[in-house]
Length: 534
Image (cartoon, rainbow, N blue to C red; front, side):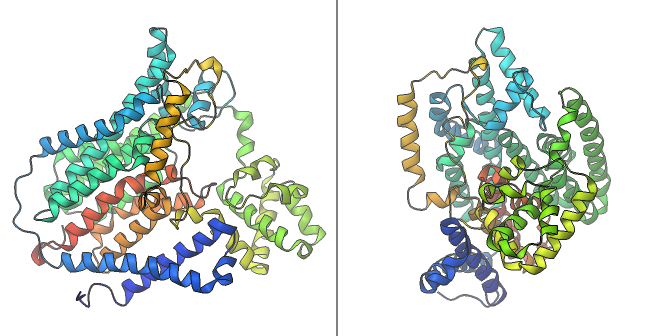
């Protein structure tokens, strides 16, 4: 196959090589929690590197070649019909899992939110909007004397919200693409959401991540429409952008970090006629979010005396992880004074037994309540250790987040069952027997381990796809069209800094947006020269 000079070599080859190298090094961490596997069997590592490199390189080369031919003349899109059909297909595919797992599978946070609300335990609620959403449905079930029914109604609501979001994405892809690629792109995206087992499981898994993913993805659709329409953007789209932006900010703590910088950049690059509408939208999101955030926090019981437990923030947890690995690998390289500084922040005598290379949460079990002066001394010591043992520190970070840059391990588990068993006082009783639910779970596990599908359950696969999609626009200097990748980049950075190494639920907004981003890149690259900037 002839590949045009523009398509790949040499910069694209370098980007793909970086992606392949991260994949291989992630596989090493997945296997032995170290990069040593790269050097123990270099021939095998090189073969795996070449397989990944050739996969992504060939895919990009074919895509770039196809994108050289502009779209055909635009044709009418039966938007409502496409949306309705997409929603129907998603509902049919997800319905068995939603019903069989009645009243729904609960994530740990969701159960703590419920037990905290009912006073069964003390819980600092960082997601009050999601808690109130769940409570509204659960209380509705209490009116009928069946709390499980209320929880099931919430599960149906959550699944319907996610299905509507994905139906909009599929319809938007059908709208953006034209010509021969339209039906293929639409069919592939619909199959991705309907058939990949991960989405059906998440549809019935009660967690704050699901409504957040739905709102973030809908907000991305509105964002792309604004860029595509330019100065002719409609007021309806601006209103949708505003509403989904507010909900994205309220549903997760990292929402504002994705929404506000993106909307500011959008405001700066859009045509003058659209700026005033976008300015009103940005101001509305800021004001309404700030007010609603205060009201929602006031509606939940936040325990003030527990706040010192949060003194070890994410940055300090990552620093502590590096210090702990350095101490384990070089126990004789620390002076008594340095040991004392560490012991004021975490229990130094428990480092060896507590250290988990893929999870920062155990550090919270040995943390101490600290003063700002002790934290500053620890930060200064961390910097010295970074210079002294750079390999250990780098390995600690690469090991902790390998699941977000390498498609080497499945990023979710047991989404057809509770992460922890619900408190008996919540009265959340399954409708089907454990044997029935077990047979369905076995079927799903077999399906998700079919060749190829396993990689679609890893966070790292979507990071790689998003990175190469962004590069495809960067190489053509499509600056304005790169704006949708800002919130994607923020989400990936949050995942890399998060306590756990491979939880795909943290990266669900990226996974849900990948079909949309691929269609977006193709649409931009296939635009006629006179309309290159959408």
